[in-house]
Amino acid sequence: MPSTAKGEHVRKLPAGRKALLLAQVNNVGEVTVAALAETFGVSIDTIRRDLDSLDHDGLLIRTHGGAISMHAGQFTDRDVDFRLKINHDEKQSIARAARTLIKDGSVLLMNAGTTTLALAQRLQDARDLTIATNNLLIPQTVAHSCLKDLYLFGGSVRYLTQSTTGPVALHLADTTGPTEVHADLAFIAVGAVSATHGYSTTNAGEATMMRSMMEKSDQVAVLADSSKLDRTLFSRVSDLSAADYLITNAPPSEELQQALTEVGTTLIISD
Image (cartoon, rainbow, N blue to C red; front, side, top):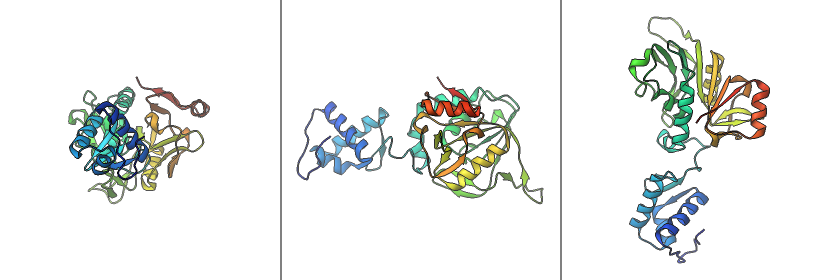
């Protein structure tokens, strides 16, 4: 890793410099273009080109004025634009596997999350679906041709995640009170999965909604890419047993696999 002492610069050929630059970003978590230019003794334009190249290769997240490690914000509350760039291919793979569980005419609950959004993008060939969600991006993403009905759960809006948090019930114009819902299948994207602590996420309000969606569905499929396995976050959603399926992109640890087997949760590893 390059020295960061003031006035001490590291001069390398471009490929070597980019490798050291990436190591610096991963070590620190979040950096600025100006700080990197001083550290490496090159121009700001050079650093910008290096960061653009590393972002293009999917090795870091380019931000205004700098960059963030791909791993720095996975387990904290980050905005949708940031999360859309993290593990994009893995989420698409999980979405393909999740799509195979959906039959035409199904009633689905889908929570907020970029993995459920990836699933919504893959429903073009489905028909007659009823979807209820707190994900504000799904209405503009899902193909209208696949829908019978689409509902948004109300509540307070979280601009950070483009979602709502509130009761899992519908307040319709022609009813005097909330309308309870029931679904064939709930797709729940979680922030972390642990053999001992079950499913968890970063926000208490969202955890409550996830748990309620699980309870109101005949079957539950949890979606979590491999970076979220064997982790625990602030707000617990449920035990592992609350899900019929865990869909991920790589084999979990032996401990987690055994825990899933013991509670009867089917593990699906996407291609």
